Length: 480
Ligand code: 4AD
Ligand code: MG
Image 1: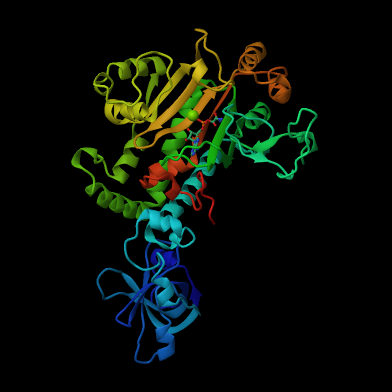
Image 2: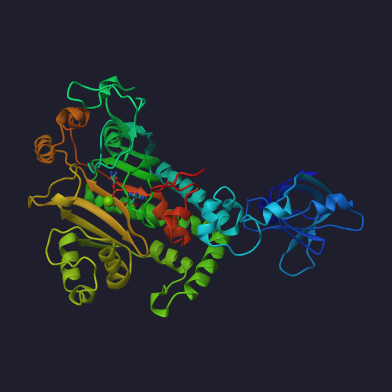
């Protein structure tokens, strides 16, 4: 008896051998054909039972959702729609699933809305769509680690509890063990955080960048890949309160090198899934094609999912300065005809997602790297250009997604950094260790953050970020 996953059965095609598989019933037809799924592949294995010789009570328990152990011979299938099947010699029901209860869940084999699937997020990985998305998510994460490993990076674990606000946006979740009903107070009546667990105010991290910089200035090339938390109250299809971010940081690398690194990383991981996950991608591509059909003609995407992935992997990203982008946007049709919600009328404004999407989807029709943004719309740590008003920042914008990467060359000059912190009211004593980097062997260095869920959205064609992470955390939602 050879124990096997469904994926292995199809890969190895070991025929006429006693095999054993375990999985869940997707469907059971004509009291004879079980479609069994074990999550190892989007495929199910057809298991053919001889109901005449089967125990009736056992037969009744073979219902959608039940967990089974199946033994039998693997043979070439005579039927349509599959190449292999198992001629069952023995079945054990490991866990039954009451059909009346199943009928109330998303396990019931029919089309369910993505919203309904979210309500049963604990069961949705058993659907074809979520199985495919989650296998791709896993594969992408492996491809990312592999890329960095092959390119001499060290994986660094940045702390999740921090005392600093790396992005300076004040969108942090506080960590405290103080009693909310009766916190210790200072003489001014403020909460006295010196009595808190860490003896100071602490939060969940919004970015591991500042800590990663300290390690880049020792190990040369590092990256983090971990959860990050943002208490921004934006209920969009692209924002989560808890998301995963990949943050490489490299000593002696300038902005140019940073753009090259980000572009290469993205292309490399897309190549990886095109090579290793084609079955799931093909399924998701068909799913997307169906979805597109329900849209009005002018809103349909010109490329299918796989074409789009190949296009990104094979073509150079367009590199454009913020100033050039503003010129394009100022003179474009939707701006002149006042179709944008936020009209672009002067240099210095922050770009909204409608502008980013116009540049990527309408103007350049390819991924775009925007660089050299105005200093006052970007974070304090970005390196000031000689013009005194722009910083060495870069954002990568993807079709259908908008911003997928945000990064910069870092300010390595102690005095300039101190001036910027002072101007923004960031106390030096909070970031004394960060300033120390500029005292002991400072050097040009750069890095970026890649939003992992935005990458998974792009790779799977899913339109809502809540559908590419197992348990999405969004305002008013932390179920499961
Ligand atoms: O542009 P951001 O805020 O950059 C940073 O955090 C830098 N410290 C990164 C660095 O230079 N090391 O975030 C980086 C990326 C964004 O481009 C986006 O893809 C993703 O993180 N992101 C989010 N993804 C999901 N939900 C949110 N609320 C996100 N906020 C940012
Ligand atoms: Mg950003």
